[in-house]
Amino acid sequence: DWFTQPRPASGQAAGAGAGAAAGAGVGAAGGDFAAEAERLGEATATVHRDLAEAFGTAEVPAARVRAMAERMRDQLDQVRATVPEIEPFAKVIGAAFTELAEWDGPLAVQRVHGDYHLGQVMRTDTGWVLLDFEGEPARSPEERREPSHPLRDVAGMLRSFEYAARFLHAAGPHTPPEAERELEERARAWVARNRAAFRHGYAAAGGPDPAAHETLLRALEFDKAVYEVRYEAANRPAWLPVPLRSLAHLTE
View 1 (tube, rainbow, N blue to C red):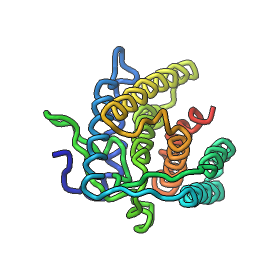
View 2 (tube, rainbow, N blue to C red):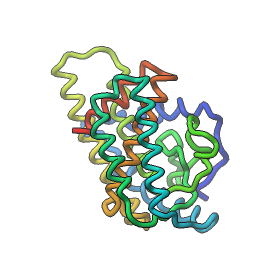
View 3 (cartoon, rainbow, N blue to C red):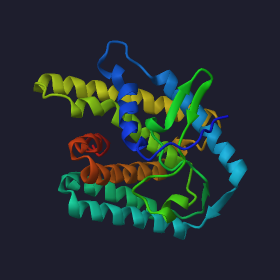
């Protein structure tokens, strides 16, 4: 059984700690998580299949996809108005939403996790277990209940790898520029390995192939990153550099 009972809302804070634990090998010689990331991708695809079988699937028309892209842009505009630090990345993020708005066909949707990150999974002797299917705490109840494409969860986990790699980097003491550059290089390499492994495991286990849906996945990742900036600015300002550093990487 891949499912367990929901945890308290305080799991949002625990998520960063779990991410940091997963990323602890970033700076260590030989530290790697890629094999586990691939297995986690496989488990995620299995859960998505189970959710589709239990709750069904549907197709939404292109107009709904365009409306989703517009909501993404609206959130970006709101965050730009309150968190000026996001401004250097706004043009690239907005372009991704514009590209999604040009979607010209139906989109398959289903029940998904909705707030998927390393703090929402647990490694057991038999594999990965997914926890807490309540959705993102800062979203409205209506948004949380909406069916979505499974790649929304994939985007969330890909973002979580970024958090895991950069959490200690952003939260730790000041380091000399040379060490800072080395840490960033190691973080990027760790993220790249785990992103690739998770995507491969997910597609190999029957999930929608991320490589075939790059426009959608890129927009979903940016939407999640904008949400993270909004959340951290409002709730944990000291952590704001974590999503901002990641956005600097994603928008290059």
